[in-house]
Image (tube, rainbow, N blue to C red; front, side, top):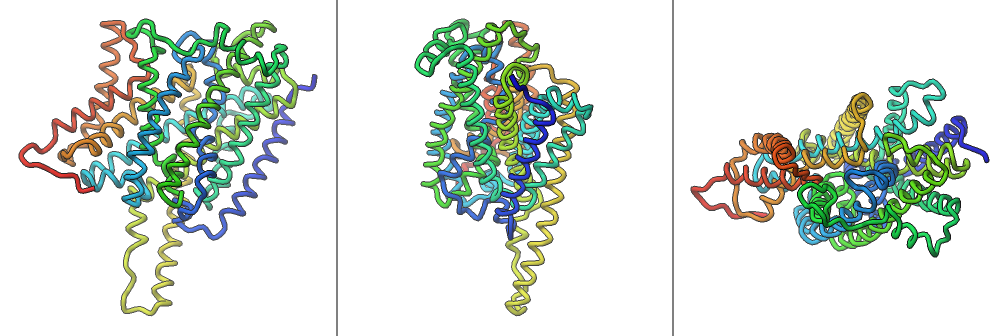
Length: 514
């Protein structure tokens, strides 16, 4: 049986990235700041729905979710489907509450809502927490892919991990720095296709090796020891309890999709609200099916490992790549590499663009600078030249910001390589719980109350809330043996909401103006 070699992997990667750079060149021609940020709001909704799958899935789902199936902790067996069910409730809220708001306000950065609702400091706080959340979360996703490629490919060639990391980020920068979202929508569509093909091909290959046909594969998996979906026992101590998983899934969907500039930026690229809502509906259906198939793949991988006596790695994230590289044929290995890179890059490239967008719009005031009036006494030609010069200057700044976030990703990935020893999916959800919680509390306070907190105190509340959440979790675990699981985001959001109540003006009534 022909196995995957480092030379073959590198050849596949070179061809793959040449294709992406070609797409970037074609789509990135004559792209201004509006095209970079929102693709001129002309992208068909069905393209956005398909491209968003890649952004949401990421290399973490591609590797970490199948690996968690056979574990004994959080997300064991098919318990992750409880989280996915919660996603559906969250997406319903996004489509019916948040999207109409964003389109009505014609926002480029969704955190502009906080400025209009509460004021300057609330706006900067919300955007700042997004930058922190997305930078840490996306770097963790990139770390997983980089560590897998390092262990199974580049280490055998004597390439240091630092070089692997820099190379991965340099390639993202190469095909996104010019076209931004206009390019990413189309490259993510290609990447989504690749990782779905990789998923389907691996499921087919492993099930065939286990002598399972398409007709009995699902029934065999669901009736086996890994197929349990619902967990209703031991609410306090079991992190996989249905209530915890379902509620946290809904809140994570709202926070990590509806309050996330990255995914909402794609939705805002649709031509109108109705198109964006259709996109969200179709995307939700896609996501349920694909996550279920990843869990099926996880069960198949563990059954395959048990049948052949393959030792499961200490880090379960490495089970899928170990089997793909060492125990399946070269075709399966190539599909694995393409799927891993596609899912990782589909998430990370759009994250870099969203971070660049948020920093440029929310902190460097790009929109305000672009819309500054020209000299009314100048000729039309002179006014056009002034606007073009302003556009070029801001584009240069945008390139530097884009490069800066790429370098920050490299630093975080290096640090994670030193310290991380847990499944990355768990790390991602913990980061989300602590960093998206304040965003959840801020937006819910703005949407469901007519109250206005003291704007200058909002940053202090949003920094204090994650610290109090961490202390609360420690106390619950040590004093009452309660594991809150992924409900960190709910606790954090409630503390933020309560803190905003404490600093609210109570001497007069305030009506929402938006």
